[in-house]
Image 1: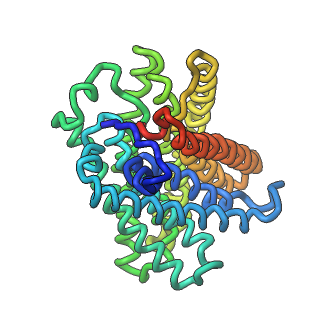
Image 2: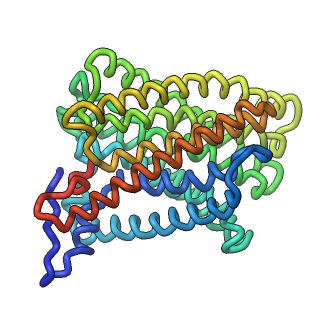
Length: 384
């Protein structure tokens, strides 16, 4: 359901009401896109020519993502309290419902950043506690989205439009990617679990989460590819969602190498070396396909932007960020596993692409928020 947002007036302070009414699950993609900057920055291979102060920059990105997460979570909670009908409409919307996967991924991304760079700010014990808390909540919500959204789709809750032959779009991946993010971010928690059965249980859980998302995402990616070949591009405001396909690709490469690198903490030979090797054998071809898809997305996005009426702003612009960031962390993981400088430089190039995408999405968002003071309904009011 998409309602215009009332124009703020001087006599009635509606700015907070506007934000509460406008918030939707898809806006948490902005948290994901900001938080991934921190994790991607600290994962860049050492010794390569990168800008000075990368670690401090990562801390700043993590702090910004944390603040955004708190603000958006509060706004969404307030919406459920003060505008429950609008809040409930999200899971009946054929586009917005799929973005219920964004809040858990936002939690997981901020949690990962807390463990990687938050220690400098809040101390190691607090960082581990916060990371564990966000990982557990994010994983639970991510599994719920991976089950609930396909259930709504199958049972018709999302309406007839979601079953059109040309209905498939990149956003279909959003509810099934969170378990892969849990697998990638959970690997860093292995050292913080007691040795023995607890650590082994977590390792096996991470691979189980990896498999849930890998197979479900593969099924969806083929449908998105088929939709493009049979029906052409989706509406312009949904074209940026094609970048979401990079998310499960890059995140699975990241997860395979992150888990494999720490597998020896839970299992002995021959399994530990085999799992490390699996990260490379799996990651290289998948990253290759991710680069092909990225090139295709870039050309299709530019084509849409040049074709009247152009590429209108929507929260989907944040798809230019997190998916690219997962490819940067995936390339960095492969560089660390193989020692290949070429993969290290690729990680730096992808990180540069992530920063470019963030600037584009953030600029579009700020411009859209400023239009809230104009008579015309702002673009961001339409929650897609």
